[in-house]
Length: 362
Image (cartoon, rainbow, N blue to C red; front, side):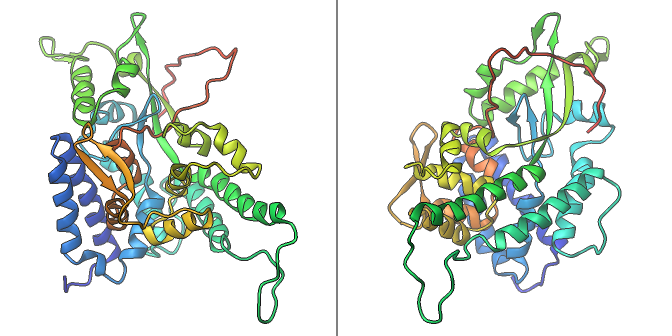
């Protein structure tokens, strides 16, 4: 590709890539998904001078939509679009334009001042600035500097905790700008209209088909109106933070591993560190490899397996994963392909579940 693309054009290219990849998965076409990524890589877009910065900003600025804590999609035809429109008066693409794209624009220095259209944008940008400062010092050797060599470490646990504390602090700041547009499905006539346990077991095409059918049933074609008001069926919970412990639990990694890690006990689970890198939104395979190496692991071997998909029909090696990462495929979409959830909130004992029909707006 000879044309020099602007940051705005690169954003569109990354958005189109993820939408096209998701479309292939909706059709159950995993080979089409692969072809989409191959075409993107072969186009030369990744060789653009600004691509790496655009990919990083794209990842940091992203805000997914969730229903009962479940990630829904990256597609503009998201089945939540109608409920979201009824709540906010804006379709998904306009909410994205209001709350996501200004963060991307700020990170790529397309705007000099923080936008005032969205209160959320300013808060996320402040957290992002703090995060980038912390990340810059992540790998800095805590040992006293010598002229020709690093000194031997006299207290290994203390030395290790310096790095762990830096990562724990990064995760804390990350939670301040890792937000979702979160909706809860309310009971209608005493019953919830969506079976969440059933929904979690479905693959991407079945999940979207199920949600589309449920939402379509809210509309009465005979009377040409909804059977229920939107507030009868859903509540908007605001912009919910995604915590590291909940994120890891959604990947079938017990949240206790995070608690142990913060205290200096390193889990012997390679997936823990990869998913932690995804949570921290480390933007490239080279940077994730550096993070994995810090903990004694790697994702650069041409032999090792990341995940099986489509009932074991396809085997995703780490080499494939690295190509997806570097092309800019959404980490949540990668995990969705593997049947993993965005997060699983911690259920505390003796807590009661309350539903609200508060008319919050996204």
